[in-house]
Length: 124
Picture 1: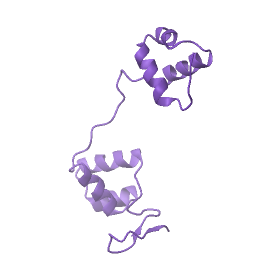
Picture 2 (picture 1 turned 90 degrees about the vertical axis):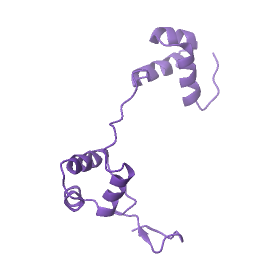
Picture 3 (picture 1 turned 60 degrees about the horizontal axis):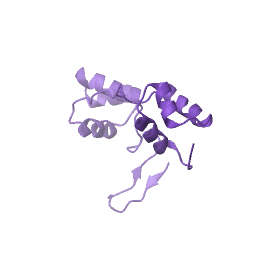
């Protein structure tokens, strides 16, 4: 088991399996909120999910006991296929404007995507 020796804490905080610092999977979070909304107690949810009660309380307190909105990508965000097409276009030495035209996107969108995700300098 890994422990934290942070002096601000009054004692050691377990950080291993089932510890307070373990994050929950998306499925576990969904199950937590489903059960909480159905009126189950934290103890019952803890047994069902297999997480310690303090970790569940922290998750509930973080959002004030109200389930957060389900996150979804904006329809304006580039898709994985579009990102792959940009990559192929750069490999084929096409200009940003040519790539943008093929995707039906603005050249500035392509430029930002390349700048955001390229570590090496590029030119065309």
